[in-house]
Amino acid sequence: MLRLLCLTMIATLTFADETWRFDRLDKIGGHAVTVEGHPKVIDTPEGKAIAFNGVNDALFLEVHPLAGAEQFTWEVIFRPDIDGKPEQRFFHLQENGNANRLLFETRVGNGTWCLDSFAQSSTGAKALMDRAKQHPAGVWHHAAAVYDGREFRNYVNGVLQGQAEVKLAPQGAGRTSVGVRINRVDYFKGAVRIARMTRRALSPTEFLPVSSR
Image 1 (cartoon, one colour):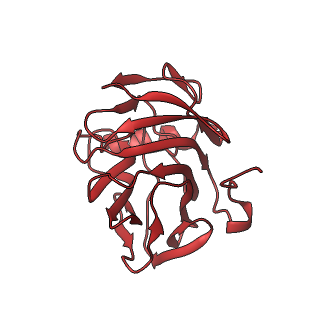
Image 2: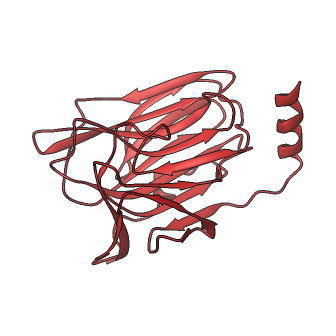
């Protein structure tokens, strides 16, 4: 009953799409940040980014930017370092009070990585990962998770990595972690430059460009 009430209240609110630029440590996307470890703001040819050491660096925000979304596109431009651990969780959206979540992960080895995207809601869950689809570590990439109300898909640099039909209920209010899973395991070594959360299913032609040059 309480969860139904919370989701009903969320449904009455007007949400906006959000773009987060990782160019400072005190606020991201207008939201206050709790910093753990010593993540650093760095310069890149495309602008500033935040680098994580893969040991204890992380950012926490008291917001779930896709709460209430019936459809969504979650994008991130990031650089997984070549010497990161084999399994890393680098971006995590978590509903309060339960295990419902959206999660970006990497599997790194031999200078390459593959994307693992996971979604869990009250009505279904799905992980998407294809180890045969490898990408070079140490350079910038675009990753996206897309849900159109029927099918969950993930992409790297606009190329489809996996897809599956699943029923994902809108999630409630929650929290975000960047650089680690929200329970502080599987730290990420690399950098994050920009993320965008859109409340509809975008096509790859509408994704953020990895480079504006």
